Image (tube, rainbow, N blue to C red; front, side, top):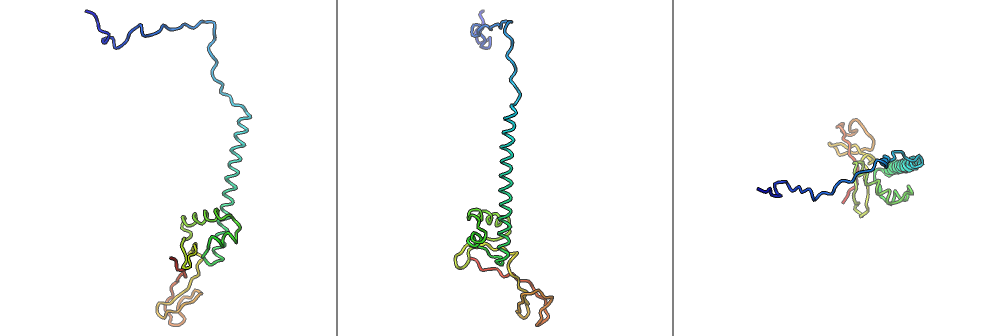
Length: 164
């Protein structure tokens, strides 16, 4: 009984080419070189150093702009517009808008529109405070332990601008 080709698992000796024998005279190829040119290492170090320097300079400018915005917001009693910041700080509008968006995202200020339609940023920490009496409705700009009129305790009230 003849075996079928299927029983050999698809193996047929004629489908394979005979192996080529290497001659003993040719040496094996050398392994790939693992050395790196020192000039290449130096160039890479310079590029990385330049990139780090640019990043540090950008971070320094960002910190300076943020400090300028906070100082200006304090001078303006907590209310700041982009136009005021551009005029006072002399920085590009795009950079100021980016910094103000970051301050808003971090919760340092609120973004809104005034009744006149102007875009403003409100820094609650710099808004003026009034000390008011629940009993007699008196208000004072300076902090006091109690109401001078009726002796009731005073509460702190923040003068926040009305926003749309």
